[in-house]
Image (cartoon, rainbow, N blue to C red; front, top):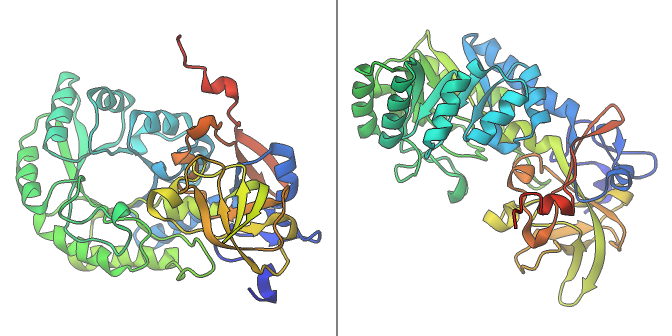
Length: 425
């Protein structure tokens, strides 16, 4: 790494910097002081960055196509405070469980602006969605269609629905986050979709408003979106088309730059205009691209061990960031105490858990790491909190919002008592 190490990569939240003390600063807050005040591990979110990304999506889509809606794919960061911020910024919300529905409503979303997804919705979840008055339920297969239709009929409801279609167009991404291929657990295949559309035309309790697809996550190439729109076009003419999410986030300095939000929006809108024609309502569902780079995770180094490699062990790991172990996600890291220093030693940043695979960053370049240092990994706003777990009995971290130098806890750290709070014996 060169002397330009003080320049932070695009993986960090907007406005992040190395301050006069040489410490990393997030949302105007000194990361070393945050670690001392709130403990580690901790998820830290730059609120202004989160708001900026939400606003940019909304304004970009509205400018190109006024009859439109940006919907937060909330599985990326199902935190009440995050829901509240994005609701305030004018987004709708997509939920995929009764729990996410509960969080979204508590976070301030109007039920009419909720889209209820899921490939295996339970009867209870469908009833909860109907009782809450969600705007749209996204039908994912035959059993789902029949179950939603029956429960809606029992309530005398006329529920608006979208049909999720698998367009047999796969985005260029990891197989575990690819969803548009024909062999997928999600949606109706193109042939099945034609039959389902005909069936829904005769339904007394369901109103088919349009089609939905999602082709995958962490996408850098925009061309597959046009291919997917072309694939579903022969299914008919509908008032609503939900084109999913998928825009990539930046995880390391070596990553190829993610397409700008404006380019992503332009690609989707142009495809609809040129292939489907005018007069459509366009819905897009960003998740990762909204929240990933708004957040970082703070750790404290417990020990440094040198054998064949240099192992830098911190006080968290796979319990707060499962993605590296789940599908090989790659992150970068930096010593927050000496954020402006030239980093030279290649280290394996590892977690505290009893698994050899509990590695956070395989090739982290760290400046003279030692016990007690604060380490930061950027771009953990997406799926860190969402996938957090209690492996080895480790309590889950807090979520701390930072804005203009002020920090506040929006989700407290779990305690040992929380680990036994549900025990009955």
